[in-house]
Length: 451
Image (cartoon, rainbow, N blue to C red; front, side, top):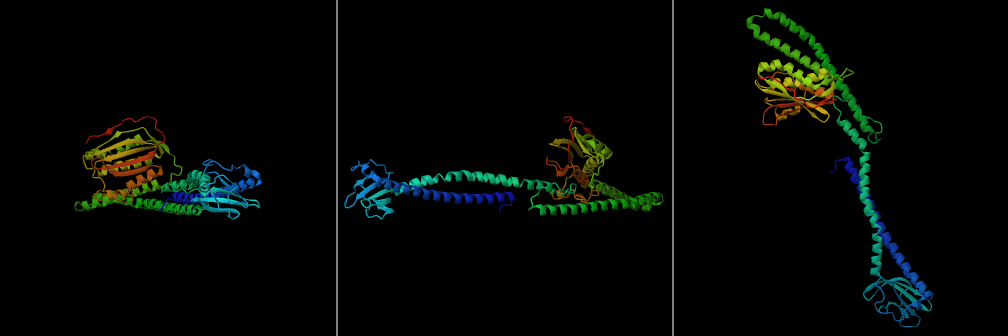
């Protein structure tokens, strides 16, 4: 079954055109045969009429054998009261003298003939032609009518493909716009110039987009409001815990420290929720600047460098390019820092983390490569889900990669996460943004520490 609407239309219209062409060809062929046969009959009748007008005597009494071509007509003239033909262009042929007036078909000398007989008071004129010759002439003439059909049919198929493709071009553009719709780009589809047949469908999609936008906005506001409301009591709890610290007896210090760690984890989760809400929110005219990606990478490495040194991690940027994007610098910095922080969190002590930049078309990419344990393949499709954690043994909120994804989408970029395929374990996390301008070629700017 053909699933493509375009292909269905092409096949349906092409088959319709082909059927019409074949029917037209057959009818033209038959009509041409009938017309040619009528023309040949008219020729026989005209020859008989001229012979009646005095041309009979012009026929030789004893024509030479083989002097007449097989494709020529044969003439036989009978005089009233005579048993032998008065004139004949081929004496070896004897047509039935008693043939009815007009046209008839007869077999003479094992050949089929078309005979026109004219009965006059003084003579009988018979003009005949071989049926095989007539059939050959009619077929040759009728075959000429098939050439236009044979040429036009392929051209009609090409025209059908062109017309269908052109007619569906608008639908294809709408399809691409639908594919581009995501949580960061919930724009209604244009309805101007849309064919009437698909206008209700476009209206339904726009209604769905509107409902989805309201739902996402409500979710974002809920997350932001909840985070704001929870931040104040958590701050108060933190202050109270700090005030109580000197008064906790030694036997309760372990449990008190667990309490403080729980409050700290909750505070960090609230901060992550606020960041996620800001990343999901529209830019709303916030002033964007020209952000230097190489500087963002450098700052991200500098921020995690103390932790890396403490754990003996070798972290650095091995390849940098001069690329800029138009965005809020805090967003780009947060996204890159989250990827680097994830790599630091999941890389064992003494491991290696490499950062590199590359250019692909209009996108600038930042790769963060570690040699940690990697992620199970079945978990990779879920790594950008909110609150999903691939490794429950390592502390985290499960929101870091969701924030990275939201920021990348916000600026028309993309983010990917995959296991290394170079024979080593680890993750390759990549984030890309549309480049505003690249002023110079690649240059090396290594930033590394030795564990």
